[in-house]
Image (cartoon, rainbow, N blue to C red; front, side, top):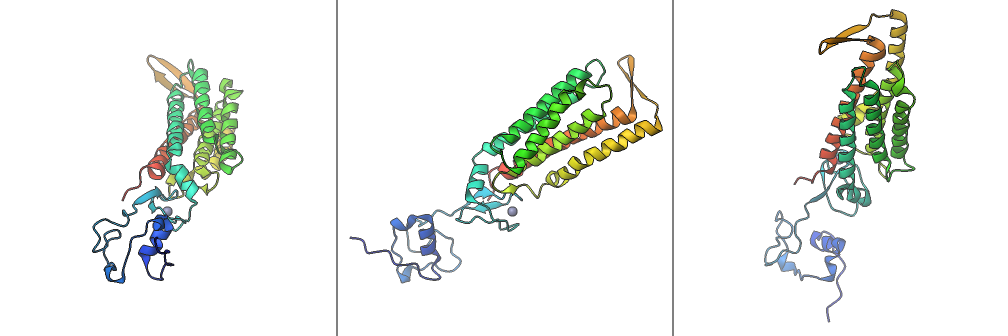
Length: 284
Ligand SMILES: [Zn+2]
């Protein structure tokens, strides 16, 4: 019969680690004479042919700064100090959020591609296609996040994308459409970087810091463009394309169009960076 396991002694890290990891059921005799010399790597205790423990390498990534976190009962980032719930880290490490970020980034890229077809004869179809891709991206962000801040942001993005299709894709004045484009892409970024349990993630990402300013700056920019368009009565800009030339209003088309394009590139770049920093395999 095996003798009962003695209680862990203060200052005996090997015993404490064994108990924590559940390895106590298979005790290895450690007489006082086999104590590990200071500085020896864990799991390579002198005098034992087999290691007690394989070294516990990093298993998760901090969802704020991407720093590797070693598996423990109360995982805490040694870089930024934020404490996480195991379940949250395990879910982000499972590949589900990685796949979600990848899908959303592809939808944004498709929306950007459609956005480029800005000639008058393609414009309505291109706007509808771009809005549909943004709607799909925001819907991707919503799955599993209902009733959380991230879910509300995703619904806001979906509502903006739906408004882009009806009625604004058909309207002559492009300002509302491209303002909603900016709202949808920034809401998408914020939704993707919210966890239902851990709230905000990816705080160290530049895009995560900028996205709120883009979201709240969109109506301000729209107001400025609207006022400039009404007051200045700026002449249309003629752009020659393949033997023909097309007139575009500077403040109700060109500026909002370019800002929306920039917003789309920003969202895509942030999603790609988030995927790389928060979901990639932790480095040693
Ligand atoms: Zn961290």
